[in-house]
Image 1: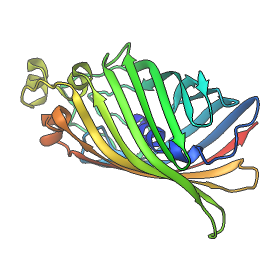
Image 2 (image 1 turned 60 degrees about the horizontal axis):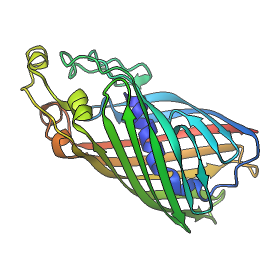
Image 3 (image 1 turned 90 degrees about the vertical axis):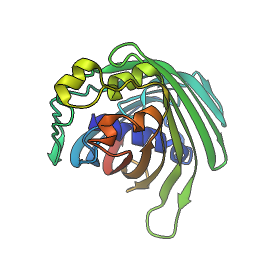
Length: 271
């Protein structure tokens, strides 16, 4: 689950920043790295943990991309200001034993006991991104074909640029984001059936769809060499759980609607 929080933070924050990055090389690019993430132990929790996670990305020119944080997609439409195409993402399973495989401090929770597992979800859909100078906006609509089996709409906007004069240039981006989900998504992660109520001690709760969260993310990329092979990525985000998500007893009785995350990664790109 924490892996999902990391890559959601990265994917929502990075669009304006990469608009300022060097033009993608022709042919294949492979990026390998690792870093640490500070985030809630599950979406809606009030306890936090530090995890060590890998960063693996594949790109082919400016068309194909594949990574856990960006999903697998193809820029079917690609121009200076507009890109659009199909995309698929993975949302990793949430287990009721609260196991956190990548946690190095904190992690583990009994909050989810009795709520059952939510299997890994494969989400398929499309994206649309628009850029004009330092400004950008994006939308991504996905339907899960397994796991939560719900519909998810991610919206984001922001601005980006390059800060110079303090050593290496810093490519930055920041902006707001909103997640909208349907009833199936919220029922899987935030609803409580009578059977789950008996096993968890939480009151029965029927969660509907709507705006699930709103927040803001910021990201900075620091190249460590002139060829942009080595780079450091830092990010931070805040999201407020809203609507039926924020009103879930899992959040109000055992967690917190305010969700924070931060991390730093170092990577090397081969081409």
